[in-house]
Length: 81
Image (cartoon, rainbow, N blue to C red; front, side, top):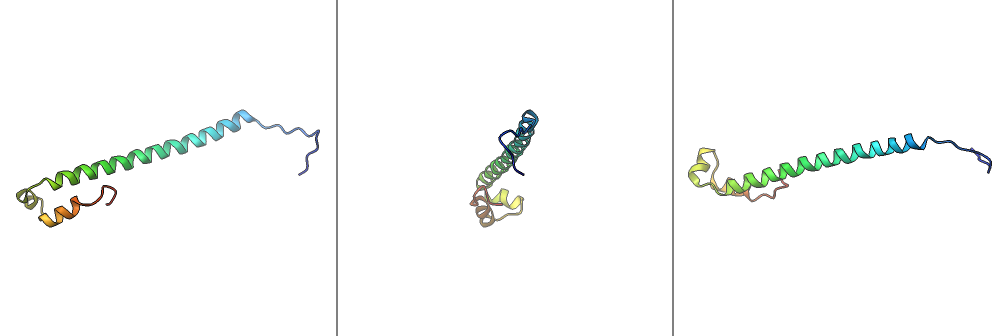
């Protein structure tokens, strides 16, 4: 399509901008939600592993773990499942 100097293109900029902003806002909102979920999971893992590392053998036996298994789990980085 060719346009001459006299061609006028009419675009509804208000609705176009609103559509773009709405789409971007949905993407940002989804990203923030996913980050919050991931950080919450990581925090839970770190706290659980820290507590696990502090249990004595008697308590570890009560939950069916030995010291080696508990140490292996407690030694994992928080981002590892």
